[in-house]
Structure formats: structure tokens, C-alpha cells
Image (cartoon, rainbow, N blue to C red):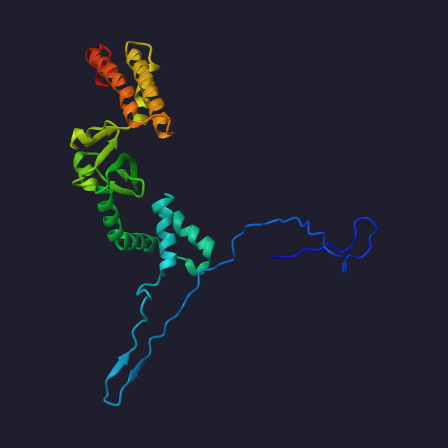
Length: 284
């Protein structure tokens, strides 16, 4: 804390060095980063000769990495391309700009540090993935990902406590199994075919995805718009009932009573549109 006192009275100009404080100080805070630079610690492992003629060299202290980069710098180097998706060259330049010439790294070193970090986290990742597989309700999704010039897919499995990610070259059932394996819980997903291998009795479709699908249909100018509007209406009714239940306005029994007729109407609507002449409506 830096205390700043007025030197003279703003009215008469008299010195305020001995004046009493009113206790009505104005607090002004400034957040900044400390000046920092990468620090090089040199370990000299002495070699000594015993009277018996044998020479022995000291080993590095426990916890000192055998490579030239410590764990703090390694974590930052891996974080920039892995989490914030900057290129490896940009990560190399950013580290040097932030931490000075001692943090100058070769591009190959950045790649090696990424791999080393992935290896160090492999056990933790497996533990988190196994915990997700044992959870009662799991939300899963996948999105396009780039591994350099190669196209890949970022798969996610999310619970209330954990979020596990897996980069896979495929967007297939096999890729889904590599992430989730023998998942015993209820799976909440969109309608992508890779999830169809999960037992339908333990499968729920995400209402956010459905709303997006129905909105797209509703905005069309052909026979698909009828299905879209019906879907949006059902979605609003379901979510209004759910919000009342979540906020304590109704119990679970009443929630089921409200949902049941919505379910029946929605099923009748969907079955009518199986033979819709508009292909996108029939496929939906």
C-alpha cells in the first residue's frame, strides 16, 4: 500500500504536514504485472576422486529436470498452443517477448515440450475420463479441430464436475468409443449418428440442438416450416414446465403430467412428417 497525503491546503495554501486525517480517504487501486524474466539456475555436478582411485560425480538434486527447461516455462509453452490455439512459432515468440532472452527456444523444443506435457498429463486425463464414464449423466459433443494442416475432431464429455476432451482424426462411432468406452450413464447429445450405438433407453437429445434444428425448418418457405413451428412450440412447452419444476413451483408428478400430452402430440407430428415431400423435413 502506498499512502499519499496532501502537502498543502487547497484553500489557503497552509502546510498540512501536522494536520489530522478526516478518515474519508479515497482508495485508488492499480493492477499490474511484476517485471519478470526467465531465471537460469546452473547446477555444477562435482566429480571427486576417492582414495581408492574411483571417481564419483554428484547427481542432480531431486526434482531438477534433466532437460534445459523447467516446469514453469514448460507449462506456459504448452498452454499457449494447446489451450489458446496460437501457432507454435507465435508461442515461441510470445515466451521470449514476455520473459526475455533467457526464454529463447528453438521451434523443435516447443514441439518437444508439448509432447512431454501431454505425457505428464496422460495419467490424469485417463483418471478423469474413467470418472466421466462412471457418471450418471454425461453431455457429449464434437466439433471440427485442426492439427496443423490436418483436419481432426475435438470430442468432449462433460459432467457437473468434469470436462474431458479428446482429439481424434475421425468423427465416427469408433472415435466416440475411444472417448467414452463402456459408458454406463445417460448420454445427452445431438442426433449425430456416432452416438446411436449408445442404448436408446439411456439416451437423451439436447433441447438446444433440437431448437436450432426446428428454427432452421421454421424459417423455410415450404412444407418443412410446419414441422419447425410445431417443434419450437413443443420445445417452449417442455422448457416452461421444466423451469417451473426447477424453481419449486411444481413437483415431479405434475411435471410428468404436463409432459405426457406434449410427448404424444410431438410423436404424432413427427410421424406425419416422415413422408413429407421436403427432404430435409423427412430426414429430420
